[in-house]
Length: 227
Length: 227
DNA sequence: GGAAGACAATGAAAATACTGATCGTCGAGG
DNA sequence: CCTCGACGATCAGTATTTTCATTGTCTTCC
Image (cartoon, rainbow over all chains, first blue to last red; front, side, top):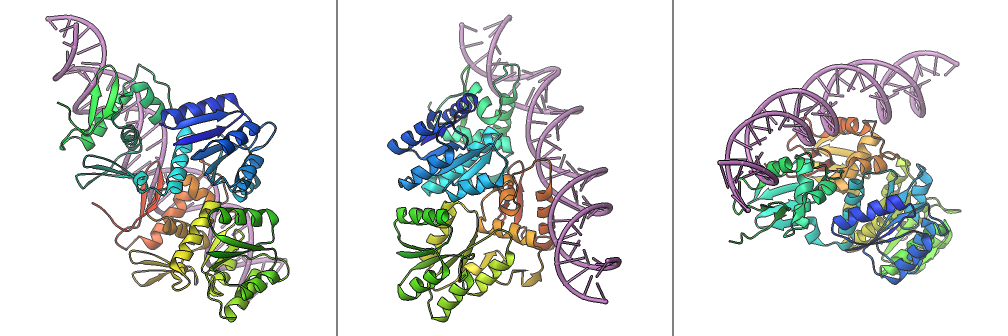
């Protein structure tokens, strides 16, 4: 999944890019409207995150130009102003959703996923599977071996991350930044505790065990026990 | 598939047309009620997108006249926010669905496709269902287990949103922007209160409970309780 | 066996949600 | 013009869930 970010403010832009890359997306970041338009026209993106306030060509014009050129990818608008008009304008010009700054990264990620899911109409994106575990993204429900399991928000986020990157060993620092909005503070064991609780719910009493810990590295979710 | 758009505001009209053309439809766009009526009468369309506020002949009259002349094609109404009466009137006059401005284009496209898929035959859109709950958009009436329930405007809007996106967990920010015209102000609990009142009316004393809260996420309306 | 990391259990604190009451606003009817 | 009632927003208090630090034990690897 390829995403274009058009954001002039360096900090915000870098932050967004890093977060989305860590979430497993392929991300391009440009700093102004002209570049945004150019990239949007010449490359193929599954989604664009577009700031309204841009030097030179503003976000609306970029959007307008892209739509005129027949580009249909979903666009998520970032508006700094609290004004309803901005939002109206954005939506009328063909934006699919908007977010008012400042926002939590997790909020953005959720919207991005919703838009991608809707656009793709891809059934597989609505649920993630591993062995007899199913995670229903829409209903935010989890079942294992047909049995419903209640997860807390954090547990759900953690499991979602593990499932999306299944087979990959996820370092603690990555998990910390994706599930918690924090930079890994080594003097805490939140992650261990969270993993433990998650295991208690989805692995205890079931086979095979899905969450494996890789000593000194992090955690992986994998379907097959490789003996 | 041929679609007629009747919309006076140039920008909106252009974008609708552009988008629908790109989506593969054959689109005619006219700017006022008279033209709308004329085109609608003389040509054959599979669907009409009709703005309410039009110079000269307003949307209702256009719709009324078309229906009187025996035109049965589905009509999607565009109405301004807050004008509850407009929506009711539109549905009573034979519209098949409505959309409140401002809306995301993707939303319009989804509704258009739904209407076309269903064809002009059954206008099920004027009622939404879930379990033994029925929401009659036309009469603005709600019944559960055959028992009539009175809802206020906000309660109705909230329930309508939940029903239209049934099965989806709706984040509070989304609810805030759809039902209230605000950007989610975390220091208010309007939503909780509204949900509470809605629950009191449609869930208290009935089974199954339809509105489920997903802590830290939002609310879902779902028909099946999976224990 | 020792050290480092992983796991488990607890409880207090924080965050989140629910509820009933109150208050202001607006429109209808007197 | 005033009153009343319905509605919706806000508040405050309560209940609940969730988080996370602490503590201690266990496992693994050297």
